[in-house]
Image (cartoon, rainbow, N blue to C red; front, side, top):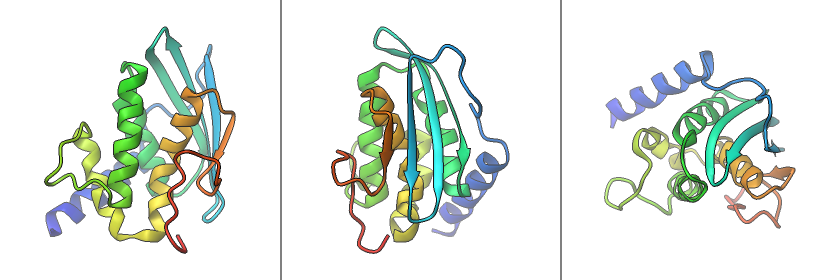
Length: 162
């Protein structure tokens, strides 16, 4: 367990310091803004779809380290994937972060993203981790703005006071 927590902290620090795919994507075909009003995270995601393939993706914004690291790893994980593969990752990541998917004993496609599995034990940080994924889901479905608190958002996952 200590090794998992150390790896989690190392990954968060690395991706926060040197986020991958950070910036604005020229020629984007889809764009969405995501907000987490509980902690102030705000990011903009731009992506380029070629048919059903997510050819390129980038993000910008102001957010906590967990949100930025999640966005960084998400963009790396979905780049080059088909839309349906990206949507599968969106749902699996959300389920993992909220505790509905236990990566230790349930099948999934998350790979290195499982480093975020421990966030389920930090209820106030879950929405920080899933905001980039909410925003990707919104962008893929041509929704301009999303929030971790929007009842109408199909990715809305109530977490008590989180």
